[in-house]
Structures are given as structure tokens and as C-alpha cells.
Image (cartoon, one colour):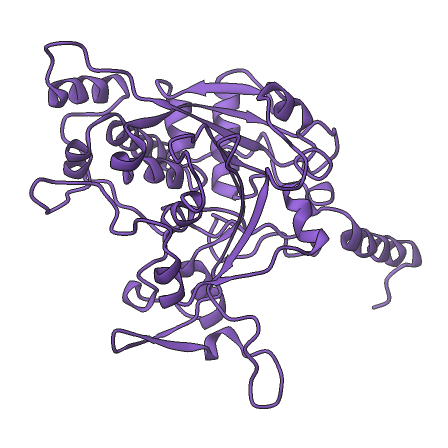
Length: 390
């Protein structure tokens, strides 16, 4: 059947626009009426509360919450330092980002159009040395097959400690402002979800690289040539397209009688259900783990609130931004034991005395698509295209 000329022309225009405009200007993602199910809301609220308790407690307290078997218990990650050798061992590749198009990812003013937030936070929103652009990929983009074509991801294998592994196609794209103390998360595809796409089957955890969590990879880059690693002030998700997270945001805003708005948007403290739910979402938990597992290096820090807003340009298809605020944890009152204060804080955050241990899960893929197409989201789950956890 032939398409009417007008419809055909419209399709062609959209595809041409897709080549020159950010995807967020074309494809609507956030729907304020698409709220979270009760099951999802309860799950992320409970998870967020447990993450808060782990951030507020000592390393030993947090270790007990995650059911750590060390003596004494500890939440500290085995992945420490700049991880250069470990990332190389597990076949993570640094992808060059000196191309002007890649550098635009660090242009928070002209590309992401969040000038109001950048100005209010007194940050440098321009691309350049203050905003370092990174892409880390779990496959070798330069590997060729026998006929000179790029080797398919599923054909790329490597050995670690006598065991054979296969590349997953995972990709972590982020920007770090070391001076301003900000980590911007952008396009994230975890090894679990990358493998699902590339292997066309459900991978087993033992098949994945041991170094796979977004929070661990982030840490390796945060500490590199960073004279002040304690200067972490914000975790910023630029443009949420994860379906579950967007439904959680919609629920939080609806309950507060708010709508998605430009900066200053709406801020939810972590003593609210909405704050815990957003923290426990695919787009929040990784940052809690970043702090929980590095108490020895960072001191006790926690995410005290999250701000939800969208960019200054008022166009259809705007994706929410999430700004997680990092602060030192409140000091213990004189004469009180850490364990009793943690239990009291836990109840204050909506926890119960006995909760299941926190599991650090693989992030659902939250890959941003910069090309307009009918399949708006990649991935097989409702988590959609652009999500991360762990």
C-alpha cells in the first residue's frame, strides 16, 4: 500500500530532523498520567529507605544491611583506586571523546539547555576542561573480523584467570566536573542488558565481567587525577528516559500536586516517600551505592534530597532531569550508639527493624536514542532505554 504524499513527506522530514537535532526534541518520553503501579512504588520506596539507612550508618552498619559476611561486616567495594588495570583486564575500552559531537555532551548550556540550574548551582556549563566527557565500552570497536568488517560484539571473547568470557556491548557515558563536584550520568547500558541485546538470550551473572556495576566504574574515573575526591556535591541524571523511573517521577509529582517544570522544579527530601522512591529507582540507586561503598575514602555522606525539573527550552519531548544533592551525614548526638541511632533513623525513613538485605543489582539499560524511529525504546523490559542501578 502506498503512503499518501503528505504522510510520506512528514516521515521524511522527521528522519532528516533526527540527524541534526537531539532525540529529546523529537520523541516525547515523560507522561504525567503514566504513574507507577502500586507494586513498583512500594518496591522502590522500600529499597530507597534501606539505601538511606546504609548511607547514614557506619561502614559496619551498612555491611550488616547488605548481609556482608566479613568480620566485622563492611559495605566497602572490592573495586578501589583508579581501576585502570582492572578495567583493562575485564576488557573495558575507553572510547575517544575528542570529536566535537562527543564534546557537546559536556555542553550543559547549549546542548542540554539547563542554564538556569547551572547558574543557580554556580557551575560551569560550557564544554571544555571543567566538563570531562567519558565513554567506557565493554567491546572493542576497533576489532575487525577476517573480511575486514567490525567484529560483532558476540564474537569478541577474552580470558580472565583461565575463564573465557564474551563482550557484552555495555556502554557507560558520563561527564565529570571535578572542580564543581558533579557527576553527570547520560547514556548507560549495563553488561546484563547489553548482553541480552547482543547475545539474544538471558545471560547468567557468572558470564558477565566481574567489574560491571556503574557505581564501581564511576569511582575509577572519579578518583583519577582528582586532588579532592571528597568534593562530591551532586549526581545529575541528564534526561531520564527510563519508563519505570518516569512513572515514579509522575507519581511523586502528582501526589505533591505539582507538574514537571523548569528549574527550580520540585525538590523531594529523603524523609518523604517520593524522595525514597526516586532514590530507589533505576536512575538513583547507583549513586547511593557510590557513597555507601566508599565511606573510608569519602567519609559518611548521603543523598539528602532530589530535585526534579526539565530543561529551560519549552519543547515537546522534554525529559526530566534528576539532581541528587550530596551532603555529609548528620553527626551522632553525644552519648548515643551508632546502632541505636541508625535504627531510629531507619524508622524515621519509613523502615522497619527487620528488612531483607539490600541487593546491588545490574542497572536496567538507560540508553538514550538520538535517532527518531518507531521503536522509541531499546531493551526488553519496562525499564526501557536509559536506566542504571548498581
